[in-house]
Image (cartoon, rainbow, N blue to C red; front, top):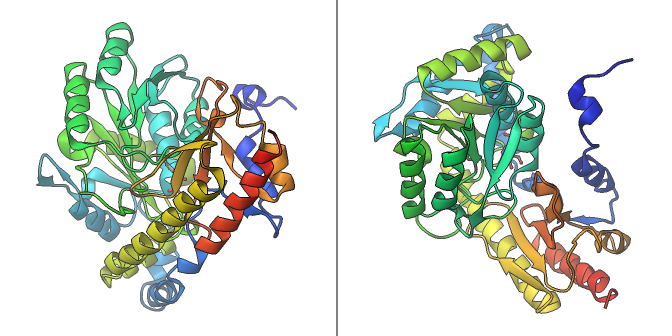
Length: 388
Ligand SMILES: Cc1ncc(COP(=O)(O)O)c(C=O)c1O
């Protein structure tokens, strides 16, 4: 059997391995990017599916439009603006999660050898989606607010990327958020060089403190925006969306038709039913409160058990905390010991496309209650201390 270039040349997924080990019931996993399952709005979703299957079954179980269920696209378009103007359903295509959004955008835009720019570090799933189309991935230096506009400009003077991919809100893996001024500076540089930005925003609604920031979509025509219901509702639904100008949407829809005809019709309609009942705002408010208490528990535990041994960035939203070991250069080093102590994190190196050595790690706090977080960090400290 001869497999594709991409499969022959890609490494086995480290995250896949980690997720397999997370099946051990005694393991405390800070590795996944999972929302808390006990917070899924199961009864409301049951009611929504029931409503659709009772009253809308002929459409819900039939083939549908490649761009997605019109009412859902309309609902999404009303939530977003560009230069302050409301969008229309024609600006939206529904995707099977934003992971498919990443793939479709890459498929629609990239030819082998094209350059793309990404933040340093960035979401590993985006790198996987892009790598399939064989681009040259270049990292733009970043600080605590994300991409540095001056560094971006320097790179744009030398290279002509197809797009820049970034996660401005509660970034995966670092939890960082980009302030308003930085957003404006970034858009100014991007406009000067006619750079297309792919803005991925799964975590923006999970804000614990601070003012909401404007979407880059609102600030420029040259932005393709990826949204999802995975983190605010449930990832198993696999409902996400792409917003772009009508030309982008037309092309992406053409690609999507070839990939899967359309996303799951029943689920799109059930999500719309749920949204129609105006249940999302109170659900998000609940997620914010609970995830904030979990973030606090993790910060406290890191201070209690690992003071001086890690430097942390305290996120103001999202699901992840980024920490750096001060005593070692490579955070892979502790992993065997931590797994033996039944606790796991993701080593920072996997989020850098150049696989540099990194002393950082990503810790997920959304998926464990405070007492489990405390115990997990205690175990982590035990594994780490053994090394000294
Ligand atoms: C930054 C980022 N983009 C996209 C995704 C994919 O999300 P979805 O479940 O919508 O496919 C994730 C999931 O963790 C993510 O962290």
